Length: 323
Image (tube, rainbow, N blue to C red):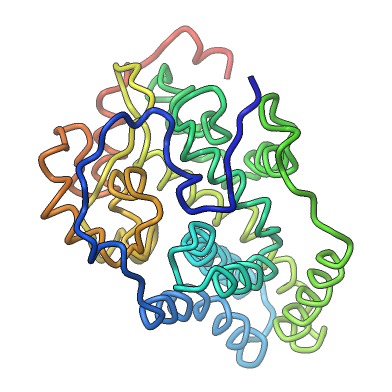
């Protein structure tokens, strides 16, 4: 069966597995353009500032290129919280503004926004099922040993995550291949222009070309590494076959700096009510969803969840020798 998701409505991201959800107060359905503007600024500004600082104030050298790779990868990773909320049409009150802002953010990191929205809606709709494009990132790997778990986490840092990510993004997945919009030629032209502007500034008008390498290597390694850590914390299970599973973590300074923003850590709340603006999730947790949680669906921090998952895995398996 081919997976489907209606991206013309925010409700198109609601899971097919959700049977009943508590009603929420009407106030939680309200959106604030001021909040949306703040999220847009705080998630895109690190990348813009990093490009400007590196391009105008740093000289090319081995350690500055390495440092730039880490900083640019981290900053590029954070942009996803902007086009994530925009894809749910929850960042701004206007659908058109959400689309434009999400599209612009996508050009910074080479993501075609309508394609991202469709893939992400499929993840929400079929969370944990075969139709979920993100399934290989967590549930299908639940039989990992501790050694394999560490290798799985570190894969992106050596570039082993790039091809699977591109394959999913280009829709070579078996169940979603006919549903995803293809970028038009106009988008590729906009992407090229945007990337040329970024690289021109980043490299000091091409006088320091290795900083361009930092940008793309950072996205191909650091960005995908942080995404893998967050995804495992949000969805990884050990010893259960429950499919429509997400995990909530309270907002913490370290988690917020490295792994999430825009209340993204309230992941159960987001999957239950994906059309709600993320500013409401802390209050929604306190007033509506807290009784729905179990000890498994409520973590203390993402880093602690990752460590606890490691501790619950077997020390070794007969698959270790094959990896």
